Length: 111
Image (cartoon, rainbow, N blue to C red):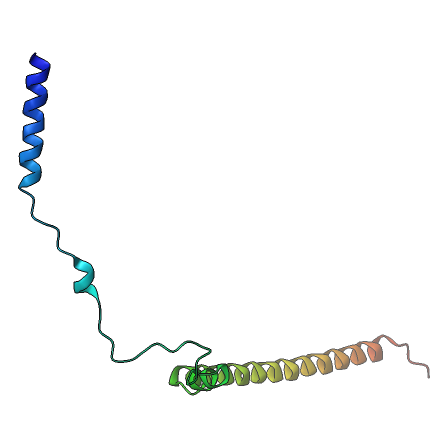
């Protein structure tokens, strides 16, 4: 008997607690955004082709800046390589002169 009364009290509490809740508002209608344009898929007339999209990306300022940066880096690398070649040539000439001087001093003179 106590269990039946206890169950009835629990059931009545749950019923009262559920009835006090506010109704859920449909937020899907509120979240719909209104766009002034329509989507165009890639196969419909008026869609941007791959080549046109590539040209648009290539004309952007960020892309142009990156090209300038790459050009600067290539010129810097070329300048460094030329300087290294000059230094290597100077070292090779200095070694040749040193070897030639050593060969002249170590050779016995015949008189």
